[in-house]
Amino acid sequence: MPGLIYPPPTVCGIDEAGRGPLAGPVVAAAVILDPKRPIAGLNDSKKLSEKKRLQLAEEIRRTAIAWAVAEASVEEIDQINILQASLLAMCRAVDMLAIRPQSALVDGNKCPRLAIPVEAIVKGDGKIASIAAASILAKTTRDAQMRALHEHYPHYGFDRHMGYPTAAHFAALRVHGASPVHRRTFGPVAEQLSLL
Image (cartoon, rainbow, N blue to C red; front, side, top):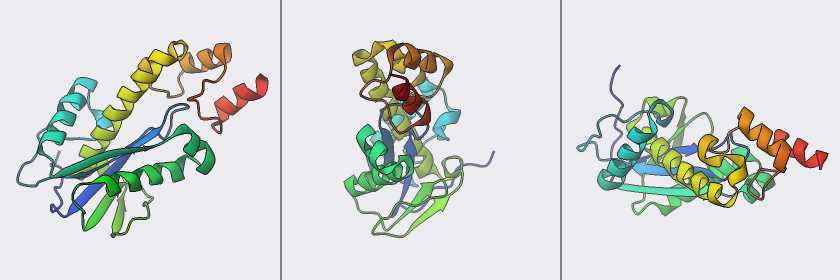
């Protein structure tokens, strides 16, 4: 497999985690990598083991020129929809970067509205190193948040499925109804609420 492309250090990569779950925030990350300090093993976060993601996240934070992680809350997701909330989280992450990039590359086919040029790249997290790094930071941050939410709402198994729609999650929703961190506009959650 050919290696990932490292854009110039004036370009940030952006990705998000948590568009599909029924609960919890959506988290985005923006990363500017140094092409002179490549990170071995970078890939789309979904293709890495949890242990590898955590190791890489630490290395990204240590070696990146700049990185930032931001989120949009469950309330914001329900107010403006998941796509708009994802784009909002991306804008926040870019705004939080310690160094202002000259342009941005984002995973997927939709671009957040930034004050700099931005290009969407489908499957970018498997092609562009800084997008892969952003996907890893977003995923590991969100997973940690869902484990923290599990402490407050242990009935749902957030520590196992991270809020994604699994059989166990549906079963817990049927028994316990929706928690305050469930996305009320998502079909299966809305359905549960209508049954109450």
